[in-house]
Structures are given as structure tokens and as C-alpha cells.
Length: 113
Image 1 (cartoon, rainbow, N blue to C red):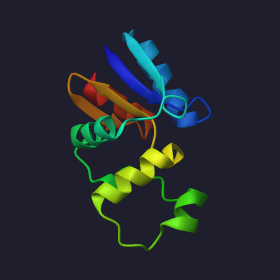
Image 2 (cartoon, rainbow, N blue to C red):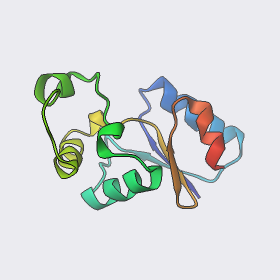
Image 3 (spheres, one colour):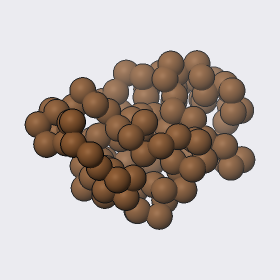
């Protein structure tokens, strides 16, 4: 099973999903704005990707610029901010066999299939 944390309004997310469909993957689609991450699941996902929480944040979002940019925040605080504002989470995220990637560019998803 391949899981994609998907935002249908995002062109990169749609492109990534199309690649998964072309590869005939068995896909679980989670629209993470409708079904938000739990704190535990977000931490686990960050660990699977192998990044710091700050690297998963969309820093061009107005929410980030207006409220958090240039502030010293701990990893726990950053995770809490993403839980409260899921729009800040970089997308799409694809997970398969205990590996995860951010699908940017969308073709990067091939790396974990």
C-alpha cells in the first residue's frame, strides 16, 4: 500500500498522484486538510522522510510569514504549529514500505516505489 497525503488543489500533488496511478500502485489517499495529521503521525512521518520539522513547513504561506517567520521555535513548537495549521505542511507526502518522500518534484515519487 502506498499512502499519499494529498491536497487536490495543488498541481504538484495532483501530478504525483497521477504518477502513482500510472505505476498501478495500490493507493490510500489522505486529504490531510480534511483529515489532519495527529501529532504522533506527523512526528513519525518527519522521521521517515529524514528531515527536521522546519524542512516540512511551507515558508511562503501567509500564516507562516505573518506569525512565525524569524522566530526561534523548537521542533515540538513547529510540529504543534503544523498540527494547528495543516496548510503549512509541504505536499504531497508519499509513504511506502516505511520510506517517505516529499513529492517535489512529483517525479521524485518514483524513488520509493
